[in-house]
Image (cartoon, rainbow over all chains, first blue to last red; front, side, top):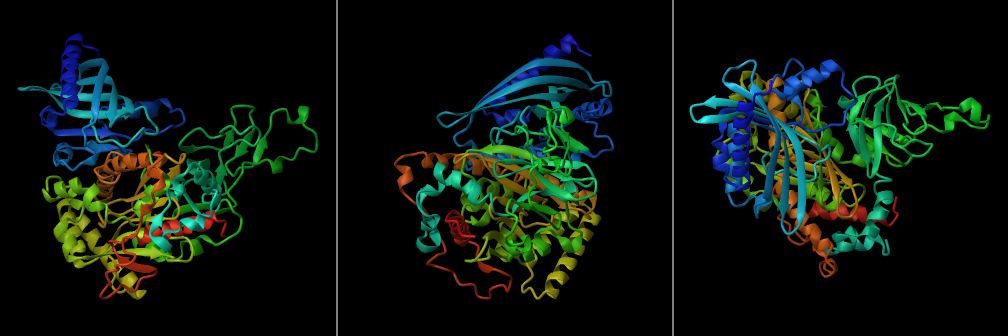
Length: 182
Length: 448
C-alpha cells in the first residue's frame, strides 16, 4: 500500500502541522482539519496477547471502522470533533487556562511516515506515522510523549485536510495530564 | 513520624503543618492510613464473569481483584509468596490461574496455591500448600457495585465506615433507584507531581478553587460553542439553584467530603434542555430519572431533595465526579500514593446501566472532555499542584503552615438547612478539608 508520492505529500502535511502546533498557531492548525474530523486517543492498556482476529479488529478500529463491539463506548483520552477541538483552542485563548500558562515549549518530531490510497474512499489517503513530543513546563519540568498515529487525509481544493486521526500513546501511565495536541 | 499526628489537626487552629507531607509522614501513613482504612479497589462490572480479573492497587501495593470460579470476589496481593514476583502482568483479563514467571508457582483465581514445581522431588511433607496462597485482603465488601477492601480483619464494617455517606451514595451518586451504574471499558492513568492528600482534599471540599483554577472552562462554557461542554450547568443555571457541602461523619469517624450537592428546579430544566438535543428517548430518561429519584428520596423524608453532586471524596483516596448533571458519567478516581511528592491517578467512567445508549454515550463524552486526564479541568489542577508541591521541597517554604481557616470562624448560616445526613455547610468552606486532616491525624497517632 505504500505510495512514494503520497508519502511525500503526507510527510509535508504532517511537518507543516507540527510546525503550527509548536508555534502555537492553533487557528492555523484548526484550518488543517475537515469540518467532520474525528480525533481520538484511547487509553493504553497492558493486555494478554490478542488472537489474530482481535488484532484485525484493532487495526480496523485504528482506521475508523468500529464494527459491532462498540469500541466508542470506551473511556478514552480524546474523542473529539471539530466543535470540541475548537472549544479547546478557544479555552487556551482565554488567557486563564493555567495548564498552558506559560505556553508549553513543545517539539513535535514526526517520523516513519507511510502513506497509501484508502481502499474504500478515493478522496482519502491513509497515513501512518510515529511521533515524539517533548514538552517543557517552567524551568525544567520535562516530559516526552511517544506514540503512533493512524490518519486519514482528504484531498480537497485547498490541499490535504485531516479527516480522521487515531492516536496510540506508548504510555500505560501518562507522564502528566494532557493540554496539548498530537 | 516524630510528633503526634494529632498536633496537625487543623480543626483546632485552621493551620496545617507541612510535616504532614514529609517523607516521615509518608512512610507512616502507608501503614496507618492505607493499611487500616477501607479502600476502593474496583467495580463489579469490571469482572462480571468467573475468572475475570482486574489489576488495581491498595496504596502502593498492587492487587488483583478477581471473580473466582464460584463467583466470589477476592482481592489478592499481586506478589508470589515464594520470592515476591508479580504473578499477574495484565491490566485485566480472564484466567483460571496466575502462574509466577520465576519458578512457576501457580495460584487459582481465589488465591490458593495449587502448583509448585518439584513439589515431590524437593519438598518434604511439612510443606503445606494451604498456607502459601496469595495474601488476600481479609475483608472485601461489594457496596452497590463498588468493591472495597481492607487489610485489617476486624473493625468497622464498610457501612459503618461510610456512615453518613451511605445515604448520598445509595440515593444520589450511584443511582440505585434507577438501576445503578456500570463502568465502561478503559482506565486512564497518569502521574501528578503532588502529594496524594492534596488531591483527595481538593475533591473533598475545595469549592473555592473552581472559579479561579477553572476560570477558562467557565468562560468558554458561557460562549456556548460546544454541545458537550453545554452539559455543564452554566452560570444562569447555578444562580437560581442552591449548592451545599456535606461533611460526613463530622468530628467522629472517617471523614467523607461531598461538594456542591445541588438543589433546584433549574438543574433539572437544564438537563431536560440538553436531553432534548440528544433525542426524545433522552428526555424520557431524564424525566423518569427525576421522578424515581424524587419519590425515593422524598419517601425517606429528604427536604429538599438534592438534584445532583459535583464531586466528593471517600476517605482516604477515592473520589467520585458527577458534575451536577444527569448527562455526565460518574468518574471513579483513585489517588495512589507514589512517594511524598508524587501521585498516580487512576480514573474510570461509570454510566447509568439502564439509560438509553445515546445518553450513555453522552455521559462518557462529557466526563472524558471535562474531568479526565486530557479534559478541560484536570490539566489546570495539575499545573497548580506541580507548582505548590515545589513549595514542599523548599527549606524555607516548608517552615510555614498552610491555611485552612475558610468557613471556620465565619459561617454563613443557612436559612433553611437541608435535613440530610452529616453536617451540611455552605459550599464555600474548608470544613471538609479540616475534617480530612483531623482523621488523618487520628490515624497517624494510632487511634483506631
